Amino acid sequence: MNKKKKIVADGVFNAELHSFLSKALVSAGYAGIEVRTTTAKTEIRIKATKSVEVLGTDGRKIRELKALICKRFGYKAD
Image (cartoon, rainbow, N blue to C red):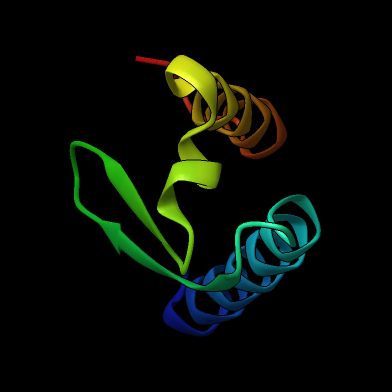
């Protein structure tokens, strides 16, 4: 993939992820994301004012969000 297409693809990914999380985490005070990509993994950090609501009961909500993101963007669930 050439450099221009990679930049556009990264921008679309960030925009779609931001849109999805802003709708899913309205009650948690969603503020944004940080995406770090390495050769081994992609790390997504969610910024929110109420981190307890992002995690949910026993981490259920964050696992559901992770599963949805993995399914939508084709990441391996590990």
